[in-house]
Amino acid sequence: MGSQSHRYHHDLAQQVLRTDISGLPLEWIDYRHAAKLHCLGQVSYSIGAELYRIRGGMCAASGKRSELTINAIVATCGINPELSGAQCQYRPPLTNQALFRRDARMCLYCGKQFAPRDLSRDHVRPQVRGGKDVWVNVVTACKRCNNFKACRTPEEAGLELLAIPFEPNHAEYVYLQGKRILADQMEFLLAHFPHNSPLRQRLQ
Image 1: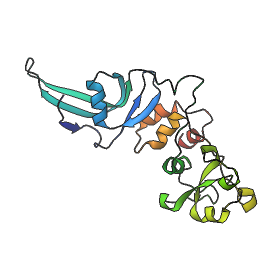
Image 2: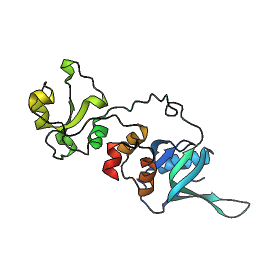
Image 3: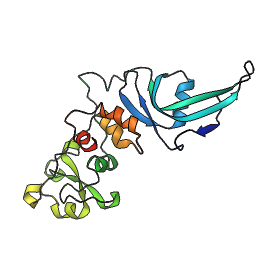
């Protein structure tokens, strides 16, 4: 397969959603990675919108040019044991980027939305008082509210927490990492969100 690529419906920055063979969302990949998986025979099936057509060289026997279509969702061989089963112990990494998106870039104290540069990670129970740096103890806060709260709990500072912090499951975390998520990719991800997910309620 050659390296010449052509845009089909989207520009080359559009991400492809990779899943395991059972359909469990794993990660976002670019079209080059998706093409490599196809060429290595690691793609079990593809679904969703056709994003790219990648054309290679001419076949000497048939005289035809090779062509590969990249879809919005590609399922690869195998199952990730760390993400499967009732005993799944997966813990998504905590980053400010994912945290701010979890909370819709809204300060959970004053209720206003801000640009990422004006937001901060606040520990509901302050770390100096034994609070842990984990999903269920952190919320998005504007710098003003965070500075005002300081080393106090929300109750002590007279602040109302507008939402209960939660830890996303893997599908939710994949969503939080996405850049421009297409409708069919979003529908696929939502099917793997918990039924009581605050993200599900926001997006539906």
